[in-house]
Amino acid sequence: MFNQNHINQLKHKGYVIVKNFLNKDILQKFLHNSQKVIDMGEKTDWPFISVYNDYCHFGNKVNIFGINYPLNAFFKSDLYKLFNENEYSSIIKKLTGWENFSTSLIRLHCFNQNYNYYGAWHRDDDNYPSPNSIQSVLYIKKEKGFRIVPKNKISELQHLNIKISGERTNAAYTNKELPSSLYEKIEGSAGDLLFFESGLLHQGVCKGN
Image (cartoon, rainbow, N blue to C red):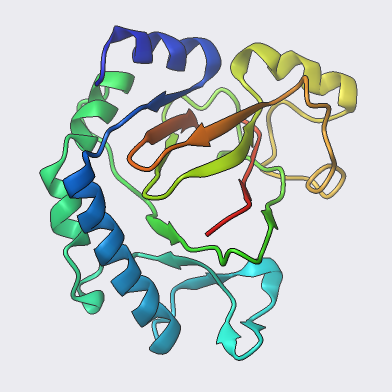
């Protein structure tokens, strides 16, 4: 499942996807418990949610884009247990060489199939390179479209007047359609695990649920 090639790709491109990280049995448990969290997030007063494009409601439902801190005991789910039972932490340590690390935020993305979601181009770290910070995405459903500018294309951003470092986002390009030759699209299958350097420019895209 995980080998030296994954480490090499992270160094070369700044991102890597570990295929089939979750087996089918564990995946079903993640799906079941995640849906439980989503249902509670829509029906209760859980305050830590993100809404899609700042529109708080879609019809009669809360327009939830993501539920923050989904491992919290508030939801009475098994997600915290499931995370601790897999090799997630071990893979991060092998990829980065870190002895220890901390996680600042976990968000359960829950796009409605009618949203046709395009996020803004942004970084999750002010600076590039960002050797002390990475992002991860655990796919529990198939999703395609996520866009990222890999390390070997970083220099080309300057030709579009986009800073390589020093800012997380800029209104001049957040919703700009960048040349397709500049970025790579990632297609994640259910059970895959994606890692990428936080300082890389990227854009969330989701066409389904």
